[in-house]
Each structure stands twice: as structure tokens, then as C-alpha cells.
Image (cartoon, rainbow, N blue to C red; front, side, top):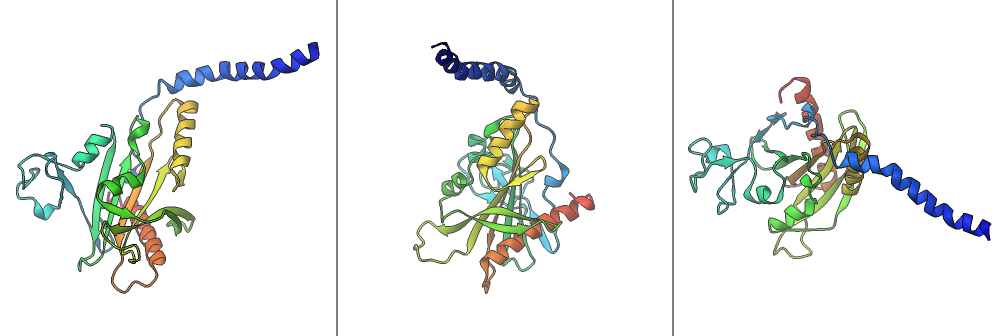
Amino acid sequence: MNTLLSKARRPMTLWFVLLVASVPLLHRAGHVEPADPLPAHWRLPDAIGDWHGERLYYSTDPAVTRAFRTKDIVQPGICPVSGAPLATISAAERRLLPADVEIERREYRQDDGMAYRHVIMLVNGASREGIHRPDWCLTAQGVRIGSLRYLTATDPQGHRFKVALYPMFPRQAPDSSRPNQFFIYWFEGPDAQTPYNWSRILRMGWDRLRQGKVQRWAYFSMQINLPPGTSDADAYIAESVGWFLKGRATALASMDI
């Protein structure tokens, strides 16, 4: 009888030990330090090769939802439609995201303007809610997205890694239409890169417990269109990701960021 009672108590004792051991970690997680400054290599270059990056601006007037390029702005810092101040974050982003989130974006085009590569960097602050599910913003923009899949790209060091990929369709496009636009994304953190949001969340949670700090994670996205005559969409997408990573590394080396 005593043996049975002893065996029954073991799981309870184990849970009690785990609970006691976790108290300092939970206390530490509730008193996290501010996140570290942004790594320099996360910044978006003004140009990559013969692709020129243009900043996009948004009106602080919520009634004006379109983006403005530099050429659209008559008076610096002022919305040409409403006269309200301009910002680099849209009204919807201000409404949905924590105040300490940092956003930087460039729309890269070549001189002929046929193809574009719209790159966004979103970095969380102290809040864990700073980076959201990528498909939220796409559907909010009135875009219909296809099935999520993953594609292998290559970084400047020749290392292969996966990125996530959504084909994009106009809302009224038939299901049989061939996608011409794609949304690619991945996450970068301290010595880590992943296309999986769950992996980022687990890593952030572990660092929060272990170090008492919310590590900075960046969510990089690229929205691209296929140039006319492109026969292999996946090859072009992989090349576009490699183009961005190589351009970012080159800009960092020359301090042109």
C-alpha cells in the first residue's frame, strides 16, 4: 500500500518541483528589458544595382489610404490630398500595431519601370504582438491569396534557406488565372532565419524566459511582379530574394545604408 502511495505522489512531486523552478523564470519574463537596437544589416538600401529604391509615405488622415511617392509630394512632409502630415506608416498599421514597432519600406524599380520589388521591414519592439500573421494585411488590402508554400533561396554566402510564398490575385480574378504577383516573406532574429511564424514565437518566448529580454525580430516581405515573358516563376522569385540579400550585404560593406 505504501509503495502504491509513493508511486502516486511522484508525478505530483515532479509537477511541484517544476512549478517552483519556473517561478523565477516567469517573474523574469514579466519584467523584460527593452529590446536591443536594430542591427545595421537589417536596413534597406537606397539602391541595389540598377534598381532604385523609393520611399513610400502615407497620410495621417485616415480618410486618405493611398501611398505617395516622392514625386507625388508637392510640399515636403504634407499630404497632397488632405494637407495632413505624412508618415512612413499607414493609418491601418498605426491602428493595428504597437507604437514601438519600426517599419521601413522601399519600392525598387529599374529605369524602364516594368518590374517592381516592394520590400518591407517590420521590427518588433518590447511587445510580442509587433509582428502579425502576413496574410492579415494582404486580405485587408483586398487581395485574394492562393495557397501558402515554401521556396528555397540562397544568401550571399551560398547558404540555402526557405522563404514563405503566397501567389496573389485580384479579388475578382477567376480561379484558373495564372498569378503574376507574389508575396514572399521570412523572419530574421538573433543568429536565426525562418519562414515559420511558430518558430519565431517559440524562439522569442525562450529568450524572454532565459535572458529576460524581448529580442528584436524582423519580418521581411517582398511583393513582386513577374516581368513579361517569365517562364519560371520560382526561379525568378528565388533570384529576387537573393538579389535583395546580396544588395543588403553590399550596402552594409560600403556603409551605404
